[in-house]
Length: 165
Ligand code: SME
Image 1: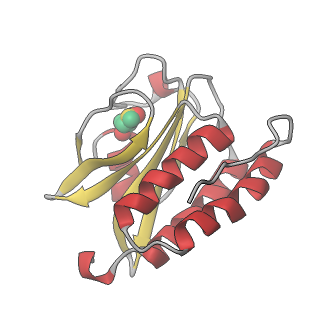
Image 2: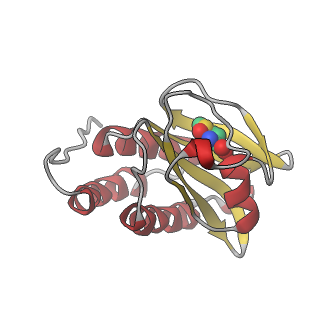
């Protein structure tokens, strides 16, 4: 199976998500391996949306542990309540940070990262993982990203294998 992700680079952000999401759905709908699907979602988001860093942190060992990602080397373990990821975990809600330098406790994996959005993936009231997207531009994320990435998080919760719950 060879698949190219095709997104019009000149389109608006919401148009890009609209073009990209059916392609992501097609990618993950015929595969039930979680790691394979998360890896392809990262690649599709990174190259489809031209994000600086995209990755998942899974809830494991009572903390968030680095899972499939695309981008520069990242910190591997984040305690609950720490950084943007640990805060999104604890509050069970999406957090948009326009300037990471102004977020108390932000964990800097790359000094190039300037803004960030973290979306928790929830199932039955529990956070399974968080999706972290970083930009090398200030204030790069807004309600449009939140709407689409939360939709993606719902699909991921749906395909999450029951035996890992
Ligand atoms: N900045 C995140 C840590 C993960 S890296 O950005 C990949 C945080 O503060 O939780």
